[in-house]
View 1 (cartoon, rainbow, N blue to C red):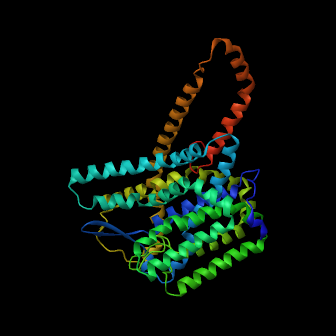
View 2 (cartoon, rainbow, N blue to C red):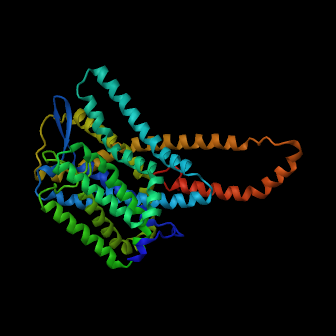
View 3 (cartoon, helix red, strand yellow):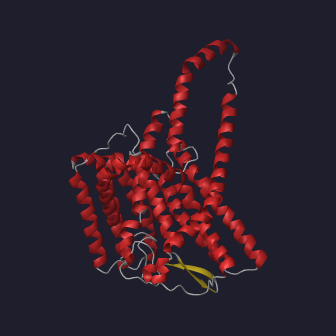
Length: 425
């Protein structure tokens, strides 16, 4: 256990299991949204619900499939490793943080602005009510990116805490999250709960700084994390103080996710332990050619898919209404027939999402190519140097060219680490 007290050096080779977990986390959320979103159309527009409110025991599935804690945990490790490499190249913390944020802000901003403009045009042209609610539902998955951007912005603080306090930082964040829950539920201070957006997700991100230590520790530690998290979930949920579902369910007193409660801390431990116990088998599979290609494919498209999957779902529902005259006002009956149609509820939105996804990727690639061309033009301009130093400057350029090329290659490799980057091979 003493290994957890120090930060391990970044691994020499790329951890394909990290890539797999990041991409799989986003795809799990996409499939969950497609398969289990039920729209209740009312006078003011669509309201989203799910079978969790109607199906006994289904909330247990959220303990594995609400994977945002695991995603933020992996993100903490990736950001720390990338920062370590950026430091070697002499990149400042401000430049590093802004670059990481920009990689997410631009694609998310495109989706958000397109839907705001589209919603305004449709609502005004057809004089429809409820368009605002529909747009809100389509862009609502972007909440996760907002939290992720917050964690990137707070990276300097997180790294400082990691250096100064080590494991104590995790204890302090977990304790603060519990205190917030006590004030929220015990003292009726409901608004204070939003502090846990920083504390709980910050804890998950901070825990990622210890990722390599978890990997290098004995296997019994993985079991310890899994069982500690599982007992914590059973105790907290079984006490009746917290809902059993790890996602919001209409009719519940509150959601464990909005804002996150201390239950998510137990969920984080459980999922870290589970993921690490699966590691040996998955690492063997990911070395096989087919699994390797699948891993590269889902890493290429998982973030763009996440960004536009609700757009594809909206197109599918519109076409269903237009061609099949499906009655959107009719409440869904969650029976055997509904469950048997779940494959169609995934395949239909997927087919409608593919054209949007390809268009989105094309826009991304054009933007990346334009930025690279602009940078290349700027780099091609010779620096202004005094005439008497011209030869010296030329000599320095010849000697330092290889070093700069190596530095640029490292920078490109770092940029490709952001999931879904157009530069990924």
